[in-house]
Amino acid sequence: MERRVVGVETEFGLAHQGRGRRGLPPDEAARYLFRPVVDWGRSSNVFIPNGSRLYLDVGSHPEYATAECDDLLDLIASDRAGELIMHDLALRAEEAMAADGLPGSVYLLKNNIDSQGNSYGSHENYLIPRTTHFRRLSTVLLPFLVTRQIIAGAGRIVPATEDQEAHFAFSQRADHMWEGISSATTRSRPIINTRDEPHADAAVHRRLHVIVGDSSMSETTQLLRFGSTDLVLRMIESGAPLGDHELENPISAIRHISHDVTGRARVRTREGRQVTAVEIQQNLFDRARSFVARHGAHHDRVEEVLELWGRAVEAVASGDHSLIDREIDWAIKRRLIDEVAGRAGLGLGDARLDQIDFAYHDIHPDRGLFHLLVRRGRAVRLLDEARLRRAITDPPATTRAAVRGRFLSAARAHGAGHTVDWVHHKLVDRPLEAVMVKDPFAAEDPRVDTLLGRLRGELRELDDAEREAQPGPLALSERYVATSPVPPPEPPLI
Image (cartoon, rainbow, N blue to C red; front, side, top):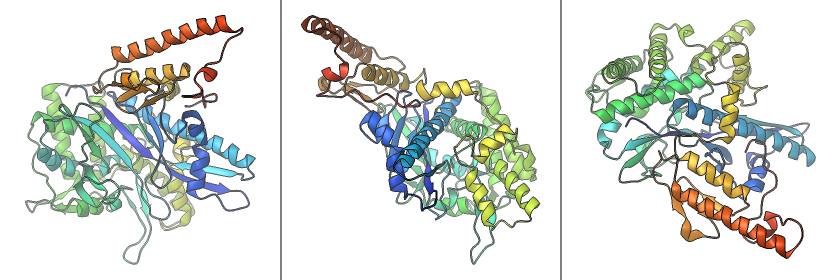
């Protein structure tokens, strides 16, 4: 597969801190947060003009799913656009709460665990050929995903228990995985989800749903997280020999690896060998580098991904985390925590360090610690502000998201009732003309253009007839009030 569609779904932690009184519980805060969304789209589950999906998930978690992307920077930009949209909603929620006599601050955290130990996810979706043998896929991919945390984890302070002292770990999600492979998503939390929902032609494509990833604040962590996984999938699909790293117990292994940031934790393979995460990642990295040397780079960021992958493995193997402490989330965060702890003489169990851990993931551009580190040159960025701002309103130009974006924008501009999902495009007053776009790579679809062309033509005819029948222009909202009232002015970031 020369081009691969990739997407990421991010659940955000939500909290409200009141002034002079207790904050609102998450379900009430979520209602305020999504009030502009419901006003805009008549639902708390909407697709927006940049091709992405914005919705409230189980447990009142705000969630944003990127549009389909076949370019790594488009994917990172689309995901970051979700942060900016969520931040805009948080500011509006604060204003609405204050107007109702509930002043305070809304916090949105792009992390994976709250102070009570509840976990929420960052799920990756990779389009793979239907012909890919799932047994080979899982045999190779599971060890990669179990150990990927050492190169792309978000890092966290693990609180002290009766059995262990507070310590730093690679991953936020590792302790909340319960199965290697399963069709469930919430009950058992598998590393790989097997539910077969391709959102495409099922005879050709399959959607690989990966649940294990930590949410990434760093754009360079995202580049490595998605780019290395794509390379491993490409090697699996080609049939390249990748060695045998199948683990005896993936769930025990992912926890054991996470809690030893020296990288020396050994886990057992099905063959009975004892291996480290560094050894597995080093082997797959070496094979990926050789694979690219033989077959060539399939996109213009491959060399950058490989260079960062090799450096991240070396940083863990050598213990020299300065090699990646401006690019990989866990290392950026650990450096910050170590510096604060050292200056103030704090142990890792101190609540002030927990606060820093959470504040690192605050998406507020002025308040969040990650954004502060970026401004101080302590964290690297890949995207400029102009590209991020475009991603808020513009879908990726080379995938089906472009079709969805044009359909949504045109339907809304004409006040026409409509429904869309990942595949379907429908005007509510003409359901028999609904268009299914099953090719995720289709950036154009004449059937959608024809449908919208008819809509524009009919509206012009209505305009002419109504101008003759009565003086003055007739608003679209009056014409379509029975089927789809034109919503109030759009929120700036939706």
